[in-house]
Image 1 (spheres, one colour):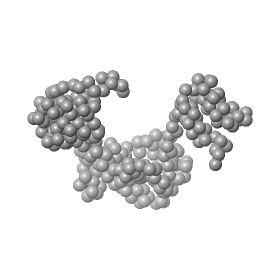
Image 2 (cartoon, rainbow, N blue to C red):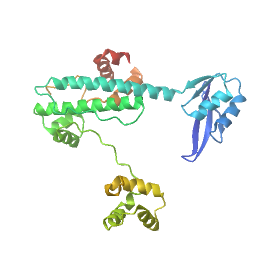
Image 3 (tube, rainbow, N blue to C red):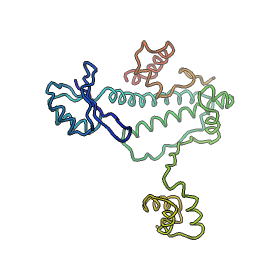
Image 4 (tube, helix red, strand yellow):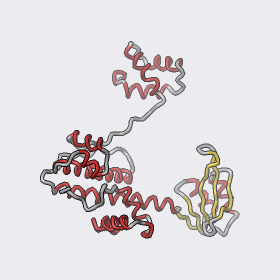
Length: 290
């Protein structure tokens, strides 16, 4: 049973291939690169290989197909556990959100933070599902914050009970609507030069080619396209065209943390963690099945 993976001789620069006997847990060989050809050549010399355990990388798959076509390909344990945990997190997030929304709905006044779904970005169905699940979980938490406020709790008390920062509670309550998460601003090589560009733009220099030449004279070493794209984006003128108590322990358990309770062995969990896991399983038959 062969395990194959790449390893870093010089991090981010020089990589090799490590080959491990998964039965004896011993290193069989280290190859000086991580090309599919080198790994396949090594495998051809070892017809005793029955199983090849590898990551999702294309080179490992190509090497196994060419060097040991008779062997059974396996996804390695890390990849399988990672996929399993992410799927479980999505299930837990949906049902934890539904549970907390149900508790908030029982309060005397419906929560103000209703929220509106955002237009989804282009991403894989799996990423979109996980993103939506995390949003639903965050929406449920914000609804519970509003419900506790209506019951008379102070912001400090809500923050302590919910296990979130006081500033977060204050921001959620002050917004009046569900605070959608905004994408972080992407830093670029042009950022340090933006004050200079704004000054030149306000001085009347609206020719991008001229601005680029002046930037190069100031030490800018990147492409004209990078300057053009950023200026068009940043300079619009440049465009051409308590009573609501939860069954779950305080602070509220997030789906990511909860998912790890199911991946650890029962004997490794404390009594409180085992109880939490039982409560989670009782939320819904789908959670228990998952």
